[in-house]
Length: 202
Image 1 (cartoon, rainbow, N blue to C red):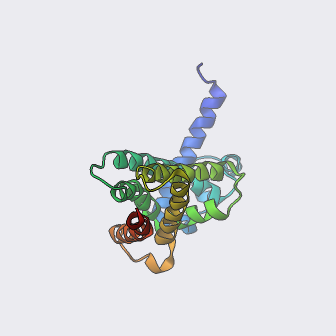
Image 2: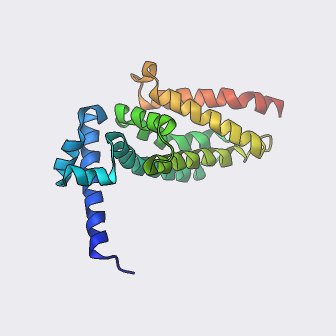
Image 3: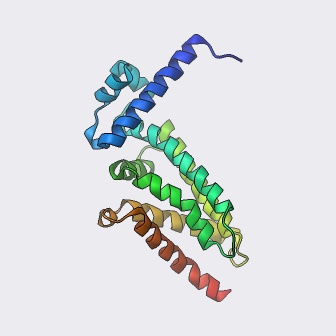
């Protein structure tokens, strides 16, 4: 069914707000942007902006969710394309675009993950972000179950461990000076160390 004029106007405003927020956050980071600046750039009243996102944090989550969703999609496709034995390479292929996404603008990535972990899970944008994080975790779980020595329950637990490794390695202050490749190499080493005892036991 064709959408009505009111809904088209609503979608247009949302897109303008998303674009404005994305451009400003990318250039200045969340700490260097105000909601009024986003409203001005999107050419909407501040009250209108608050109908779409009531805080600056929600604006950031709205923007980052789209980037995070694309990163998870790209990672899942990359993991499926990996040839060879073992699960380490596919898991690293899955998380590579996720690491790049979180570290594209360090302040934004750190704030985004912090808000997903510690913010109100009932807020719609956070709920969507948490669902994306669960999708990443499920993707890792699926890859781990390819190994005969890892059952479904253990795979789910290990996936949570791996996502915790990703979170810490991409947001901890002591790692901020590292390149994406250095961070990814460190994550790979940690995943290998996590899986190695099970491989030896098998």
